Length: 284
Image (cartoon, rainbow, N blue to C red; front, side):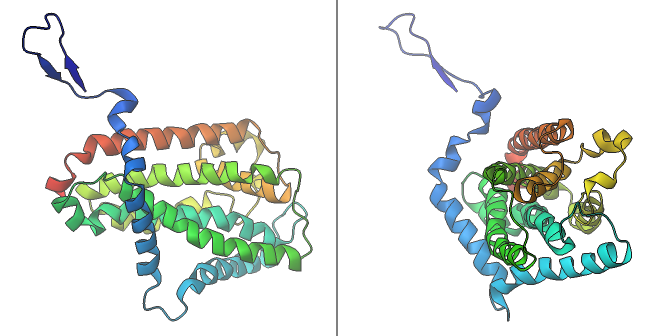
């Protein structure tokens, strides 16, 4: 931020250079100026992910479908968990869509700075682009897997909640905010501490079972619902099911707690990432 004194127009101007504060310090407008680079990085991440693979983009379908089949056997056929009147394959696959987007952010976003260390150390560009591109690259897999969900709903004759489906983009936005917030934290921490790579498998596995992906949130007793809602992905998954299938309670107190936690993670991740950005080139 630059300030110029104008006490006397005939005297030389005095220029004060001070660091920006608040939201101005985030320089989010840089993302708009570098939007072409974001598009290029997203496209590059997608191409690299499926380059020289036998199945190509079919992997975006294989992984969630196989997970759905395992969940169906364990939690439907064996454990016989309630699914609120929805066939279990549709019930679980609806949750696997936002969860897959979140896992991509964890795996790709957290490694984005280290994976592109040559760019980080040699040229200037908003470093925020790297984790952001990783999250949006996951949208490609999300779109492909969504087609499979439509097929499953047609096969099991599940009628979408047409009166609620307009809220789906809002929950998709919430999923992106949550995923990007976590990616910002982990990518910045990973520059200094490579323990993030070791912790990711454990973190992903723990978070999966702490989120109502394979089961309904209704199996959690009322006394634990508020504590359970501190998991931001619980609100995302429950919101997806409510918007697509009409199951659950919709926007209740637990959902708003999850929304608040998601926004908190995102905003704090932005400030932490920007505060550490000046050290990335020297530390990485």
